[in-house]
Length: 163
Ligand code: FES
Image 1 (spheres, rainbow, N blue to C red):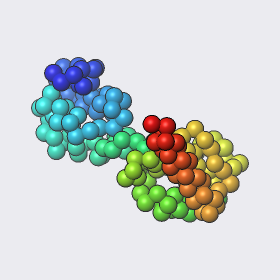
Image 2: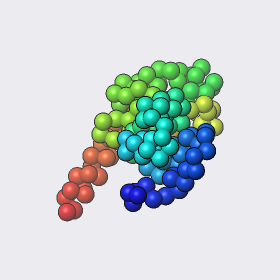
Image 3: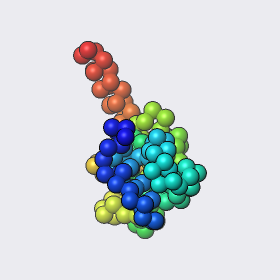
Image 4: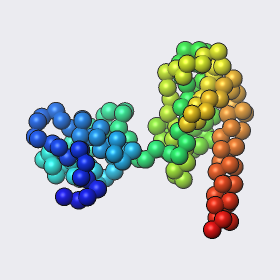
């Protein structure tokens, strides 16, 4: 057995209906479900790859791409919705060049939506990793994302200079 797969993902005993826990286990291990995990799950279970792929794409909990370094959670709960969340989400999509659920090509940002972050008085709200940004406007959310990009470039430069 390939070493990278030597974890509990592969305790498959042939029980029908175990595909979901197997895929969850793969995703917990890799952070997403890579192609090689699909191949392996298919080989171990005897379920055709196309079927495994079909299950992965059916359930929104599964990801075929790694998460970005910064996970943007845009709130679309009631308070945020009535305060313009849709426009904020559209702006973030435009600024990042990805749809909800997508990750930027540089691997920096993943955009998701959530039902409520729990700080409705600040609506509309997004979280970027653990940081909350509220009372947003399309202009302010663009600024925030650009600031993350600038900080990222600055820290990459610093690291390159330190080598
Ligand atoms: S609805 Fe957005 S924080 Fe509660």
